[in-house]
Amino acid sequence: MKQKQPTSVVTGAAGFLGSHLTDLLVARGHKVIGIDNFVTGSVDNIAHLGGNRNFKFIQQDVTEFIFLDGPVNYVWHFASPASPIDYLELPIQTLKVGSLGTHKALGLAMHKKARFLTASTSEIYGDPLVHPQPEEYWGNVNTIGPRGCYDEAKRFAEALTMAYHREHQVETRIVRIFNTYGPRMRLNDGRVVPAFVSQALKNKPVTVFGKGLQTRSFCYVSDLIEGIYRLMMSDYDLPVNIGNPTEMTMLEFAEQIIRVTGSKSRIIFKPLPQDDPKQRKPDITKAKKLLKWEPVVPLAKGLVKTIEYFRTKV
Image 1 (cartoon, helix red, strand yellow):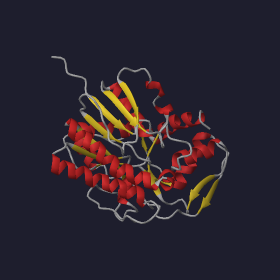
Image 2 (tube, one colour):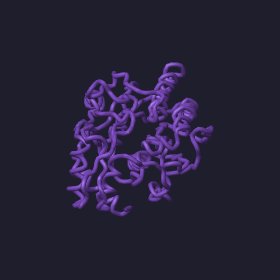
Image 3 (cartoon, helix red, strand yellow):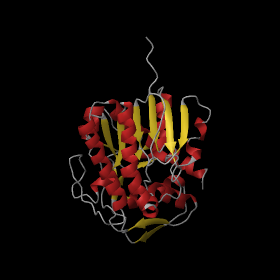
Image 4 (cartoon, one colour):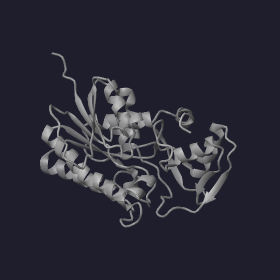
């Protein structure tokens, strides 16, 4: 008997991660219903799927009731502003999509008896006092600081996801996403990769905050999406970190971007923003053990593809 084609709903389908996830699902034989209101997503990210019979798009704010005909097997909740510039400009919308949006997406999953995955974030660890960050770490977060709207929206989303799991027996998955980069990031989204790359490509000064000693680790988007797919298809219902554990300082990263782009930029230093985490690195022991996953794309290779994309946008 022929296996019926699975149907996936992706909220935030026109975003950076949502669009890459949609591509992977379509490639793996899913019928995808993408939902986005284009607050931070872009039609360009999904334009190549126009006319694909396995992709249907609905322009909608997911904080409103989601009504869909027909069966749904998987709900992937990726709708949310996700960069500091976005959530500082849209703090209430960020909180609403994390709370009301998650509530509506979980309601859909419960109604359709679908498996649900929420895209959480390394931001729930705040400015971590434990390094690297394992899933058991509860975080060090300022609820009333400028980043609180994003951190608390995602912490609430995790709590609500577990509540639906416990009370309504919804099959749920929680992924905590660490810094990710790749094509389709917005040039002006305030995150470090687009900021450094666009400054370098324009030969403008590359802005490093503080002394540039704060660390980050960068995961290429195809690695991340593969990890998330494996988590959804696994039978593990507690949070899992997905990210690249190779850590570097912002100063080293800025120097590498200048080198790879062949830029004439020099590095300048500006004061550190409030509550900016000093270090961020995932402990991916769980992902390795449970999902047999670890990143495979080296930074040098991922940066070449990312920079190629940005050259067409600068």
